Length: 261
Image (tube, rainbow, N blue to C red; front, side, top):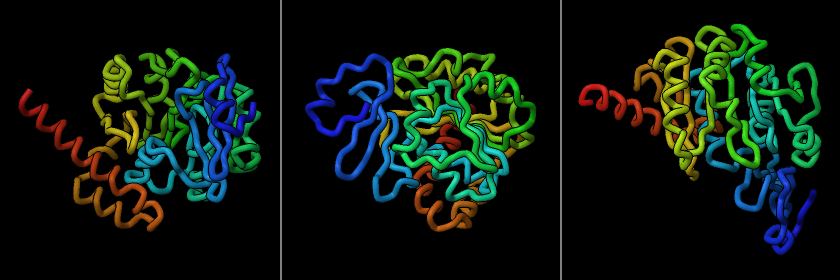
């Protein structure tokens, strides 16, 4: 369903099906009128608007040239479009279990499938169960009308995420910061990844973004991490400056918490 005025949006009572709201400058994907799932500027369809999507791209601070990126949750395609345009060396597969979300891809100018991009209608749990040491980066951003599906927050799921990653592969998870179970989910990720995980506040939102690594990438020294930021393309570097600072600060906080429990 396409809505194009505020009165329609305010009066719309969603039944769990995705719908889009369009104004002069942007188009948004929603499951109800309380929260925007994705947003796109009409004039810049491949750029990231929502703060949590920018923070999730922080994996570039640890791996700026992944060969294989997997995503769980398509939404309006903000992350897939950004990666498709700005990481031309990357092959991308996206698992989205709602065919009605996939059906809206043209509205958000998501590219058609080709040799680099595959968008498949399947459960994200199956994607990671079927993979073995395949993915350099795995982005988990799966939500429905009720929030985060339980199957995408279980210990078994995070264990499968670990197994699906290549050596030194990275998992990036978008968690709701105001969810009472967020700390539980973070603890599960820590357990699956042997403690190699860090959670930072997302830009301009209440979400928390978890970075976890199958390997030693998260152990990158602070100065090396900041140098990596400077070495990124100007487009990436400007976007990720705050994320880099937040990661450095959170690592310091975690070290203090360990030293003084």
